[in-house]
Image 1: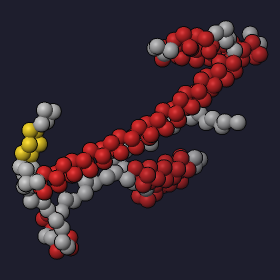
Image 2: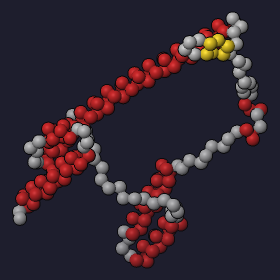
Image 3: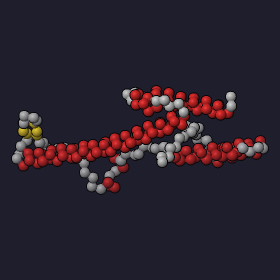
Image 4: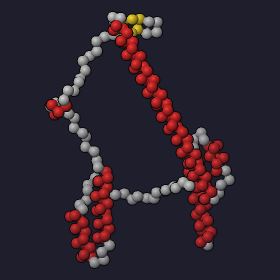
Length: 196
């Protein structure tokens, strides 16, 4: 098998794998998938159409986010209107000296609210009433230390002389000790897409 035919075979297998993966993830949009990828056999064609499908979904996501934001603003306005109306009803009932009133759609009543906490000067409050923050893992700092150790280990392992390598590895353990409970995992590969 020539290099060209081997490369072509790999591309065909990769295209088939991509299309099979896409078919496996669809549900109600199955017909749209078949329409999008119908007759596609080359890897570049399959990837290009997959990118277009992603771009279309990104447009949908942006539209949905805008709609969610608009609906969220609308919900907040409705909540504010309810709050204002409740306040007006309460005020009117207090002015009229009504404690309770039954209507055909609801019964409303006014009562003295429970006392609520007001803070005059927080600095004077005893510490027993303050909650301590839960410890939070500094992932960036931990990752930085682990990467420094990894870099030092790689440099030490690259030393050809066995005695010098052993001394360098001991120095790494002294200067960059291992951290129990964490390690660096292989990063794998990452895909970057620049839109034109």
